[in-house]
Image (cartoon, rainbow, N blue to C red):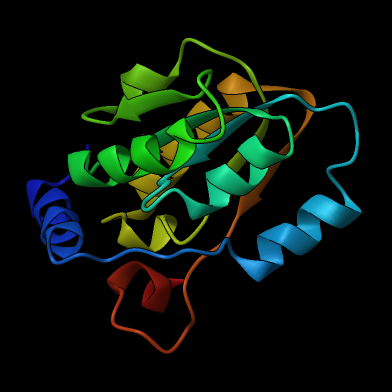
Amino acid sequence: MILPATVKSFEDLYNQGYDKEYPSIELVRIHKSILVKNFKTLLDFGSGHGANGLHFVKHGFDVTFCDISKKAVDYSKKKVRKFSKKANYIHLKNYNQIKTKNFDVIVCMSVVNNLHSFKEMEKLIKIFYKILNNKGFLILDTNYIKNNYKILKKI
């Protein structure tokens, strides 16, 4: 379940103009060192401003951008349109929307800290397992430990 308060907080953030031009340096390093296999499909779950997924679009991946913020999905579309017409976009309203395609790589950067319970985290990881191709990669991170996220304090 995606909490309406979480959706509102991200819509507000993007309505204020939040954006990043560059992808996560950690993700770029992972891409350069591990993801050189013949992977083609990638789900950027919680794609936000789209910089991470755009990095992979520029390297020939078929990327699906997925976010709970419609404004964030719109940002991604504008950025990616210059480089590729074959990217896909999901304005996520419920998890069932992402069960229809298998991915070689799933990127989930700084998302799990926004979930409201361990049960929700477990549910999301089970969905990832179902949509991740055999021998695929799940790249998942959280924000720093020193933050205000309740779920990370529990971890």
